[in-house]
Length: 425
Image (tube, rainbow, N blue to C red; front, top):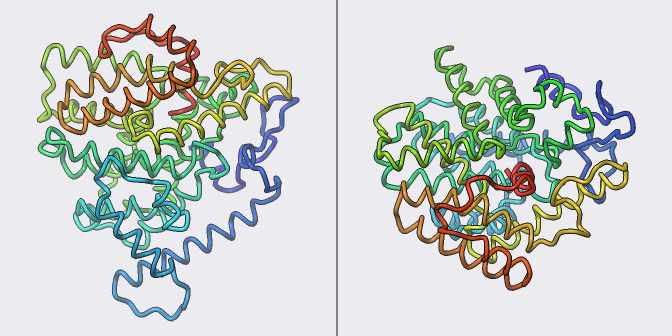
């Protein structure tokens, strides 16, 4: 918990022990275009205001009178956001619009709504104020200056996870404990993401890389950050200590599964289970494995969304890649794969990612859960890939030559594509 406790007390400072001697990067402002490095006090004020707004909403939900005239949202916006939540299980759910309608609080509102919809708040006797505070702190600990790895991405992954949890095989088998874990893991899976990938942290000797010995550095940090907030808010203080620790451990297992460097390991295991038809969802360990695969799918499902949503995510993630590349150029570091804006395009990056990472995973998921949703996702994936290919004729030609059966696409994604995935996840 070392990194969490230090971070929560003093913030992500520009200089840390072991940092690259020529690269004092403050990750809190890495992607900021307007704010300076000295905005942490202002951020703390915003966090306080956010908590006050959600504390007020908790009182309203409990029927307590409120004396503070502060409103969470304008009534019109609140009404529109509520209407959207009625269709939160739709694969066409527009998280960008929902974020605007909730004044940038999409992660808080969506996650709270889903926990309530599944009856988890009542079942686990979660204190309303503690839950609201936890969700607000989670949302605030995402770096919204990041073009891609921000709270909106976390909300999008949580909404996708909800769609998968409703699939017949899962809905009939998962326990309430499984669903709670799945939603919490989705909401926190990229918590405190710095907007750069693991190789960047390693080559700049960042303290997180040293702390986790260059292994699943980001995923370990996301997990420990989530555990830190769970303990800080005492969200599960009403549960027996062993249950609370079990939640923390299994939350870690889910989040660590999003490490793209282990993609082949999980995909191979999933494929073997499907080939041998031996997945038994009455078995707790098998259910947990399926949750891991569901989270992996939710994390990289952007290419499977309708074009108007998928395209926005593609532009955002590539913007984040290229910004890292610009910093690497500035400090004369080796430029990470796919991060050089002069050597890559959005289209080429996306075509490679879809071919070697997304298609194999979602083809196997469709074998596991052959439903209308799975076919819809594969349909969007094919159309989106064709759209990017039309913008990149050369990449389109080479990609078609190297393609085989979608479900059996190359088992060994190239290191360049895995590098992209490690950022996108």
